[in-house]
Length: 411
Image (cartoon, rainbow, N blue to C red; front, side):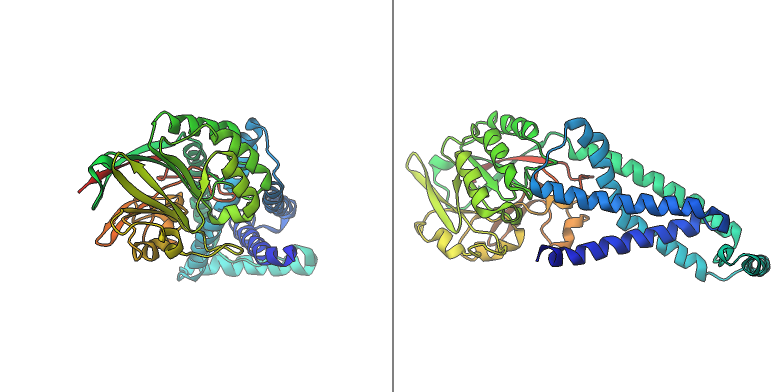
């Protein structure tokens, strides 16, 4: 059953590696006497794909690599595989366009001469046959451009790994809440999201995050999903790292889709052992002085979840109480605000991990809400950029890890 679920992923991976090999071979290794170089290139790309599959398997079973191996081997190789897709598309598109551009008379003569030589070689030695696709000057120009693109990809990978490993950047925001009681004005919430505890998010790093969050001395601490990445073994390190992080008025958590990958029972135990309250279509009342508000949490629409039920999450709220809802996916904002949520706190997008701005972000593929605060007539939505990285793509550019301190203001 697992093999069938992985089959589409493996087919895509194989197609990417094959497309990249064919493109690089045509740009850099066009001559028939470069057989061994072609074989080494094919072996290198195949090894990279096998490494990627091996990493995904090891992450699932919870293997953790030493820090030097992770920094100098695992993450660069994972970045190389992640960038294989855009490289294959970009270089392949450039090669395809170059083939279709009109050829000059001198280029046509050059191609005819090369074709004649190739035909003669094939008669003398069938194994030496080689089809000429591009005039040599044009191929050399493309090869130089491809070399620059590959260098840029390497620099991008280095910068992306460095940004992904940064300590979270602190975001401070005041959020107006209609009907907030004067005794709750200035109530603070520390939001943590998308930690992805596992191979690329170690216990030591989580402990640094927990200490930075604890130093803010917030009234509430909330975890908005994807606390674990893919392995059940990540539960205990997560609990040990965050068990001393407590809000003065409470600590709450919800599930994200990756928590179901790791296992709902494991994630629930990890949250409980971290001294947090798990909200699965349920909620709790927060009181300070004579004021109160209600905080609810909806489950993630993953396979095996309870489903998204904001009605149940908020059913114990009093009519006059402001309502805050934790919902892992920003796409759940409309459903939650329809039940009277003044503020919805989400994550899931990682800010796209590659972003020039909230509008120009890869997270736009998931929906219009990519990162930051969105104010609407029906309520506010805050989309946290997260702290870890998704799956096996250890890169961030323009969307650094985040620690959010949100202050509620009476309006």
